[in-house]
Structures are given as C-alpha cells and as structure tokens.
Image (cartoon, rainbow, N blue to C red):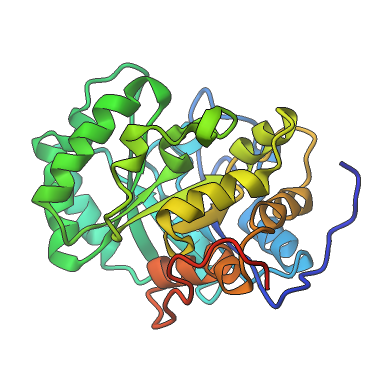
Length: 302
C-alpha cells in the first residue's frame, strides 16, 4: 500500500480508540526487557501529528504492557499534556495486594478513561480476570459506573468469556469493551461469529473493538473488511462497535491503517460510520453527552 493519506469525505473525524505509543526517553520511562524498540511505535506527539494529517481528532492511549508492564506513567503524562485530544486506558496488576488502591488513585484522574485487564503471561490462571483481587477492581468500577476493557487471547477465550458472563451478572453497572471482537476469526465462515460471541448480542452495555490486525488478515484472505464489519454490526448494532489502530503491521503506515478502518465501515450508513469511528469512543472514554445516533443502523450507505 503506497497511497497518500485520504481526506475524510463523509464528515467523520476518526477517534482512534486503541492507540499504542512509546516514549523515546528510555531513561525517564524504562522499558521491559522484551519490549519492542521505541522507534517501533510513535510517541504521543508523533501519533497526534499522524492523526491530524488523517483528519482525525484524537486517540485513546492504551497501556502497552509488553513495553512498560504496569508502569502507566508515560500515557498518564501524555494525556495530561493533551487533555483535549487523548484519554488513557490504564493497567493495574490485578494479582497485586494493592491493586484496588492503585486503581482507585488513577481513576481519580480525569484523563483516565478505563481500566484494562489482560493475561500477565501465557497460560496464567484466570485469577487475573475474576480472582478476589481482580474482583475488587470490578467492584470499584461498579461503584463509579466505569469502563472495563478486556483482552482475551485465543487460548483463554472460551473459559474467559464464560467467566465474563458471570462477572456481568455480578457487576451489571460496569460497561465492558472487549478487544479484537473477543478474538473471533473474521476470515472464518460466518466471519467467525460463533455461539460464544453471539451470546453477547443482547447486552447493550458490552462493546466490541476491531483493529488493524484483524482487518489486514481479512485483506490477506481476500475478504472485503466491509463485509465482515457489516455482518458484525448487523448482529450487534453499530452503536456497540469501535475502531482502533492497535498494532500497525510492519510496512504499513498509520494513514494506511486509518484508510483500512474507513474501508471497513464503508457498507454502513453515514450515521453508523460516525458511531463506529468517533461517537462511541467519545461517549465511552471522554464521557461526553454525545450518544450513539444509529441503533442497529448497519447496511445502507448514506
């Protein structure tokens, strides 16, 4: 892909709901031993410049545990510098005795939009999701009406979704954002929407994010991303979907990732495109009064 950045032609200013950044200052913000090199991901300033060139309006910075573990200082500092344009999704070690105290302190900050839970190491017991210490974070968000973002890898997906279902019953006030459409395979028959995924269709407080990696796999498999996303939106409603860049594959520029996101919503109505690319993220992470404008409007282009 060698095209230049495309202008936004349908009055949508995308808000990247899952952006990864890294500081070039490794002394101020030490990185984990297995972190990718800092130049592999943009700084917050570089990201915002790229967002602006693509006609976007901001980003949600998600803690990159591979790079910084549970040290959220870089994204917190970045959001403090650019409060009009970015918010932070932080990660707290849900197996640590002081996790709920740490989470409560970060949630006091206006720039912190959500907590995120993810497997700390491959094959780790699912206590990180619903153990006693993790549930203290769930209770904290339930009391505050907050957002919990969950990433499930394919090897824990089935059991993780089953446990999440029980957590939803226990903490219904918590709004959920599930990364990568719960890791369904969009290139599979029925776009990977299996029974475990479809079981969430009737819970409006659960939202789903799709990102560049899944869309790129669709392209590689010869499946138009717009078909896959229209199918998911048709079952769940565009008001529950979000687009984010996440990990941009090697060789792909940020503007190309944005173009891929725009292409993925091309079969939706204009109102639905705005929901997926912008309005849903502003509602969930910026806590604005702007609400989704397209309940279940999915298939008719504006």
